[in-house]
Length: 264
Image (tube, rainbow, N blue to C red; front, side, top):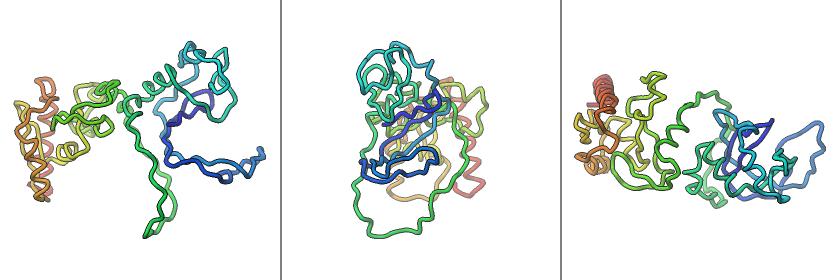
């Protein structure tokens, strides 16, 4: 994992997607005579919703070490370096702040560089503008904290948190700004199928908290039916008298959508 610092703030983080290799600079700089010989490291980068300015990083963490490879000087200022290893308390603090402490140990390793047997018509990446869910990082931190393994609220299986999503009980597009600040509007749902079955309306949570078949019946397959039967009848761990109103909204919305598109 790489933490990116620029213009007096931490502005993003990335994961390394393949080992470093020899190669020319991937960009041109009119003022700096970059060497043609160097090492390239390909990463998948994500921008932080809110940059972490230098002053927000505790001074005692910046000065806890005094070694050449440390990114800060003795007085806590940032050194003029390109890549430094960050470990210990500072690493833990940074991972907590960017909402990655839980997932750090779950990052997948880079794939083998095998030649593909077939190719697709690749025409380059497209630049798009997207809206980021501003509350997502904090809600995920609320659900999982520093846990590495946690249970799915629907199937109850204990799974690595990287396989769990912060699922909105009430459809997020229908929530108010006030509801998006609440912690009882989300639950942990696994990527093994529970999140999709709930989001698409194949299963719902009834008035007593018991998981039921949802209004959506099509398209259906034998394997999907088995996956549904495995959780139907269980009690949802996220259900309570407080969250029932959100589950009720989910039931009503899924029923209306199924009728609208003839999926019931």
